[in-house]
Length: 175
Image (cartoon, rainbow, N blue to C red; front, side):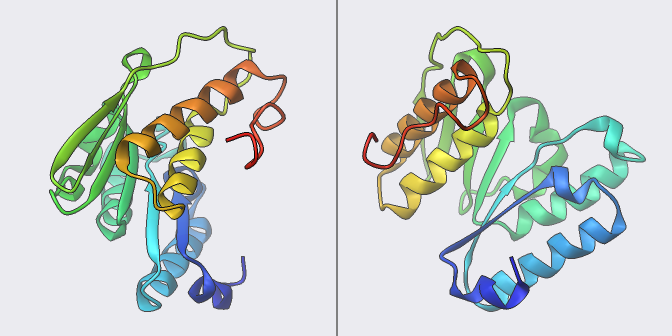
């Protein structure tokens, strides 16, 4: 997305995976986040820590923590909580993937949970990304946290049981 189009968006979503790809990628993510912040566009951030892509845990903590602190909506796995501790404030909406146990969100100083769906895996990845897409779309639709979690879990289950990451996802009409 061209940087000047960010101001016309309702939300910018960035990931730690992109930031892990090197200095140029980090600079691009930071520029997008700065543009969103300056335009008062909500920022969503998925930590997506992959240790092999970072020179050190310390550098990952620095960059991921910075991006997490800039976000309004934060997605992470339970094992990533320590990487972004400074961002775990009561004001920030934090969605935690708890694996087979489901997912939780802390929003408006309350915690909401959804159980994981017991579905056969289709051999494809993409459940986390589909979850975030479902959650974000529900947030943009004005749904409450429990409904956001439900839509995220539904899309995640659809992604991991289909022939590809996206082909089995429901259409808006099917939601």
